[in-house]
Amino acid sequence: MIRFILRRLFYGFLVLWGVVTIIFFLFNVLPGDPARMLLGQRSDISSVEAITKDLGLDKPLSVQYINFVNDLSPISFHNFEDTDSYWYFEEADYGNSFKLMPISNGWLALKSPYLRRSYQSRRHVSAIIAEAFPKTLLLATSSIIIAMILGILLGILAALFKDSFLDRFLLVFSSFGMSIPSFFAAIIMAWLFAFVLADYTGLQMFGSLYTVDSYTGIKYLDLKNLILPAITLGIRPLAIVVSLTRSSLLDVMSQDYIRTAKAKGLNEFTVVIFHGLRNALNPVITAITGWFASLMAGAVFVEYVFDWKGIGVVIVDALEKYDLPVIMGAVLTISVVLVLVNILVDIIYAGLDPRIRLS
Image (cartoon, rainbow, N blue to C red; front, side):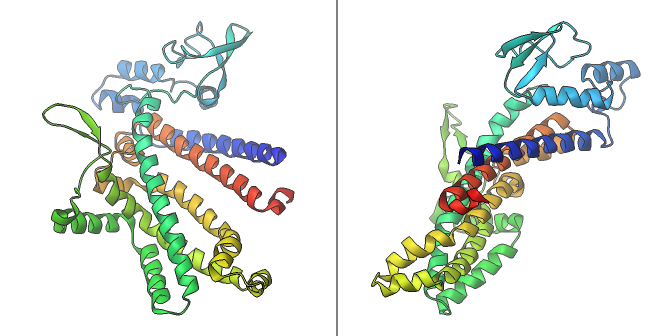
């Protein structure tokens, strides 16, 4: 099992390295000049050249790539003396680094990944993401929990009452839920439950995780604002989980060992829950993890409709302003989450089915 986990971690590292490389070269070939974006189109040439040098964009692309990887790596080379070659090193950014060993005129150090600064606000990208990412993580997690719990329960009911009215209704719901776009569902949900039925639901059309009292200025947690965006974002994965649970459970219930369990006199509930459902959940877990990553990256429309200021809104704002460090940092953060979730799922698979470890 340890070899299996180490092998998955190594593969995850290779994937992240590939993502870092693709993101760097992709965003460095895009048209546009970050220096002119900072100073304006009427800026003089000398100011543009000074900003370009300060951002390290005057260096060859290979040097920029090495510096970029060095920034992100937890074990990196620090050179506080040669500031012209290593323009991005700041003692304020690396004050918490731990020196491992001296190399040449610098140090090999252990540090947290450095995502650089925003071109527009000059704030640390890590600080910007730290503000927005927990909101998107909470929204995506709440949505996937709703989809998982309701989807599995409804899928079990559809399988147990196959070809009944309930089964047909749930199949229609699954087809409708998988086809409806998230932004359209968000608009309908906001209009129906936060406008038409607002007196009965008590829900608001707009709201974030924290609400500030207009009189006292105190910020307090308001989870009520999470209900509509979480349900809206969970509609599509819910529909997929219902369909997958139904089809997978029907397939498992036709196996020989299920008939043997029934022949031994076990009741229907015991057979379904303790014998059938465990083996039927593998494709469901795969779908849930895939959708979790998709929800992390694709919640931008739902966040905009409900004014839920998560990482999706940050990415769109950065795209409008051509703020490359923020875009790259946000994409890398989502990629890390995706890789870690996939590794965790592989470990869960290996725990449920030992044949996966052998293969």
